[in-house]
Amino acid sequence: MAKILLVIVIAGAVYYICRAYARAVARSQAERAVPRAQATPDEDMVQCCRCGVHLPRSEACVAGDAFFCSDEHRRLHGS
Ligand SMILES: [Zn+2]
Image: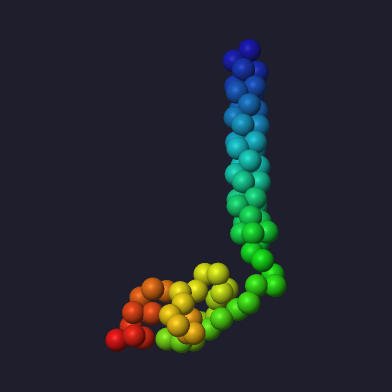
């Protein structure tokens, strides 16, 4: 009788772990899919005048007609 109970408990634990794992995998896939869906494919890309990295225009810091990847690079370029 004790062996049957042990098998039931182990089967329940395996089922619970598999369900938690499947949920974690589904959640990580959903998180990975969101940024791709939010990115606008036809947005203009601009180049940072300081380091040359390319980034979407909406994420760039603008100073006059120059674009920068970060506020720090905008400051460094001005000084
Ligand atoms: Zn930069």
